[in-house]
Image 1 (tube, rainbow, N blue to C red):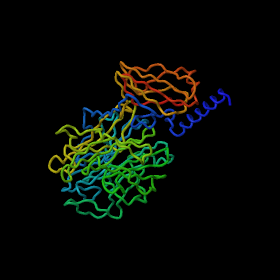
Image 2 (image 1 turned 90 degrees about the horizontal axis):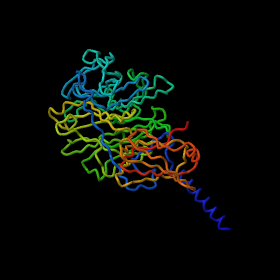
Image 3 (image 1 turned 120 degrees about the vertical axis):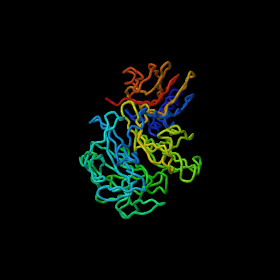
Image 4 (image 1 turned 45 degrees about the vertical axis):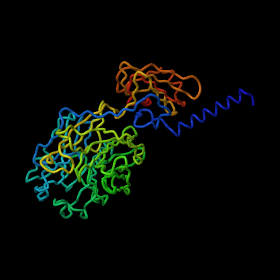
Length: 492
């Protein structure tokens, strides 16, 4: 074989090997953003620092407060906030607790312990100022003039709502998932009267056309397990299944996962997250909030730091997963959202909504806060309200470079032929993109500068067309810049 033919054969083999890597390590599809929680899509990374960004708490916090007798003890997001773009409206389903365990209240004509967990509904045009409409659905102390909903649920906890406007059955466009104690016998727990684990106790599902009037599934409970925390439900299009997370079947303050094809029949829960040696023996996962965003599961763990008996603070840490089963913890265990300073309304205890609200330029994180630590008695114990914290869109992590340039090279992917977009800050700096094909010369794009949520790293149409359908790597060189995400435009 001649040298020319041998070189040609080696080049062909190299091209095949390069293309084969595309199938084992695919780059996100056009329109899907690549986030930097880990380096799974990167081949190399040099002189770049992964920075964790903490959300900024709103100056008007708490934004949703206790105002009425039926929420006299707590308003708490063992619940869900969403944004409805069709109505341009934020909607909230939150837990309201009327009074302390020592008191009694009358709900739907029944005497119940004062710390019964009930369910309320609120709306907002801006996500900050909330309206609590009078719905006349639930009788509280002889009056229905309140914003409580779901009278057929008895004592629900962790009301997770999934809104699916494309659901063909209008009566099921809103789906709810919660732990309901059912109408079982009352029991005593550490001197407090509570609802016992009777035959109706377990995980419930319920459906609604408007998010206000709910119809529980007649075969409830769908799991004969409890979950004394906030629940999470979402739909994963990658597996075409509903997914739920909570304590059910986890064996304590840990996180279990279950799947369903129809939101009614759920798989046996499997433990997916529990504290490890690095967390320490006095650490528990009180709950979790999860966003399935751009194909990535983003978890916010509620870290319960027990310092004395059953008393301790709760703050938040991040974790993530590519499949919702195998979870990756931040190896540095950095605090994502800390408690407020001593004496602040959220200095002792925090619990978050089922999911964040990701809209336009922001990630909106709703959370309940308390001055008291979890398990702490005394007057500070009475009081929990709901606040808001925000991040720049895609802003959980960034890859940063200073005056010394840093770079990354992605694993091979098939170039879609569309524009490269970045969410980045590069005022006084730059981001330069270079495409590295398996064969032939590389191509360097126009430099990106400035601060943009959807910046374009320009490549002329002819060059993009020439790369379309071919395996390439992408090299980015950053100087005095922060890169939050990158993606290719969707196909026209």
